[in-house]
Length: 308
Image 1 (cartoon, rainbow, N blue to C red):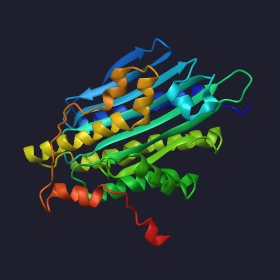
Image 2 (cartoon, rainbow, N blue to C red):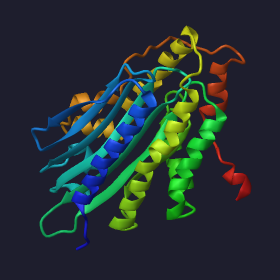
Image 3 (tube, helix red, strand yellow):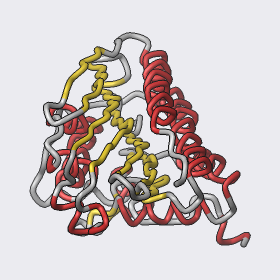
């Protein structure tokens, strides 16, 4: 029976939450995270940390959870029948950041571990996660930095890893009903176990630790860019896409709600302010139009296809 060290994974995730919160607090320079520890009646719990009304971040949530139970949700066993009759544990760190300044992108990251066990049988386990960037007024150099950092954290695990998980991210964070990506992508991986526990865990750590390297330099570069109500209103409108994706498509949100997770923590990804507008069309040749025409379709940001 293969060795799976759940305690080691949990210790890393708790330390990662600390590291990310420290980096975001420093970038904001004003507000602090407030911690809310919680218990789940069916088993497990977590600690949610939320920063609000900051100098840079309107709301930033960094949540750790570790939940377990004797029975998988029906939605999970329908897709993975081998999980039927097994107890499960799911642990992870998930974060969503909604800045004040429309020139600072919204961002999301998640790393997680899942294991389902049954006496006398091999455990079923996997790692998942990734990070993605949702700018409103993109700067191409920022997008290239984001993707270069993503590639750098993948490269030690094989030349094919970044292209594979970058493509998965483009496909996963795609709003079919809008025919556009949620943002400019990044990495997404799930069901990772074929490398064995140690290598799979090492990759998850690499992705988790890369997030602040990818995001904080963009925050620092854009947080003092001037903006007015026009840009703010467009930011609030585009946040609506974030809500649509999370409530319609996001696996983590759906699993959390269906498994009886803590609603307040699951929905911390929602922006504090958002608006919808019927039939919105950006003005021709505007910065808003450029978001749609240049950035909201999957593409090769690093020029890898041209050099391969």
